[in-house]
Image (cartoon, rainbow, N blue to C red):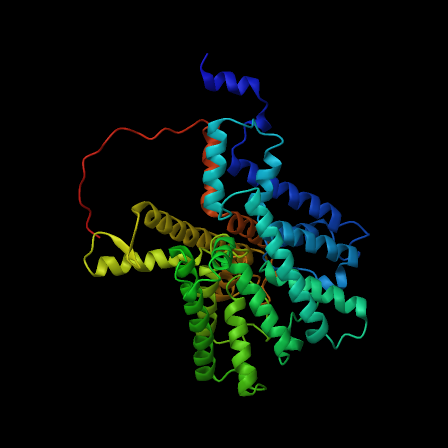
Length: 467
């Protein structure tokens, strides 16, 4: 009897789960429990059934923000509290919470298990447990509370009821920091478009939540160093790429909507235009809040294409947002630059990037593109054969990217889809939040029954391929 067979007999199935498999099951379990709670009469009205609760719970755990109900009207205060708790679970790191839970059920001290945890945590972007997770939670609590205090006293001061104002401030602060995009009002934050305090607070919370723990921790450790010269390459790359994307998004939207002279400019002055385009540029990178109406009629096709690009890129590793991540795009751009220059190595800021990182960036991008296209294909087929007026491909693709990148922008498509189309979005949200490589790893390990895969020692002859 081999050692692996002895181990399989010694431990039950749930103690033999790998970290990716346990993460998937934990996410599904949280969604299942959230669905049952949200569908109860204590948390929701009669308009919310099991399907609506399931869609909302998935959107909350994956911190997406897409919804087929009115959060402020269809959920009671208890339901809104449960929703906020699910946002915290999904945003603060489902992987970190999963690792703590796994310690109680998985066969605990083997070297393989520890290596498995460390590798998967690094892929997920958490970077460790214990002290690191406590730091993540403490940072989140401080920033969320500060945001809520500012919104309470200076942002939502038009709400006369103090308890309602306090809850609105806290809920939107939680939603913004976790890049969720859930709001208590059906128009999101459009009624506060001229309120600079609300816009700036939401923008800062979204950015800080999307940067990731590694970046905020690195900045805090080096806060006393002049010009932050000791920051790591990862931190510098994330900050620079994020700043470039925000500027490109804001300026790009300003140009596209100025040329089209669309609906968005009809009732805005220059100050409102500036803050609105900056707000949407930040929000497009997985937050999902809107301070102006977004639809196929109000934004030009070029503006929607720009938003889709920002959504697909998303936030940074270890942050509360989704997308393929800023560092993935930076690695691809650096590889492209090296190819055009005829260089054999990929170099970023005088640092050589390993081939493994570049291959991983290519794998994430290609797999994500293929997955989004399959989502769009399925929804197109469902809308064509479902007896409903089919949506344009641009609307469907926009919605699929919004779901997969856990953004939450909606052109009015989500509520009109059939249950099958909405289920496709549910799968896209779940895969996009966990990470497509993590999910594929869980499936591969399940197929191979969790056995260790040894590196092959067989070498193959090299041959060139013309591309």
